[in-house]
Length: 123
Image 1 (tube, helix red, strand yellow):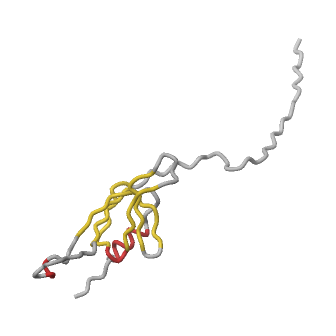
Image 2 (cartoon, rainbow, N blue to C red; image 1 turned 180 degrees about the vertical axis):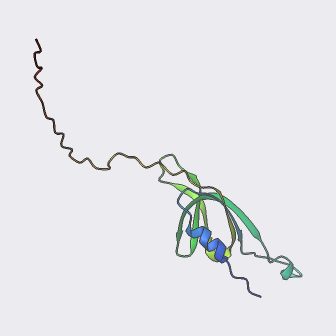
Image 3 (tube, rainbow, N blue to C red; image 1 turned 180 degrees about the horizontal axis):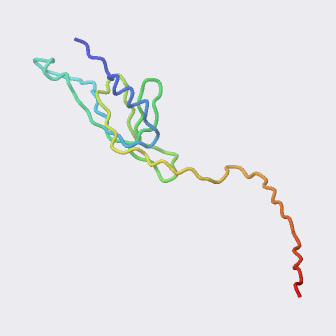
């Protein structure tokens, strides 16, 4: 039987990720061999990779494992989606609270009205 990877559940999980989510990805790697009597005994080479979700592009998952201080250089792993067995979300990236301040300034008109109050002399 040919197993479909990734599963529908894993696809949904991948589609819900946002940049920075901390993940563990369980996937199957290719395997080379030499002088093996029974290749069917060594075909399965599971891998586990932990990193921060970066993006999905052209059927591949990009995980970042290290970022330089300036945020312009990365180290990580690119995994074809077709070899992913399971994705475990360790921690969702913290979302910044939205500021209640306007993103662009807008004019406010303040109206003031001065009222003179005359006191009645009761004498």
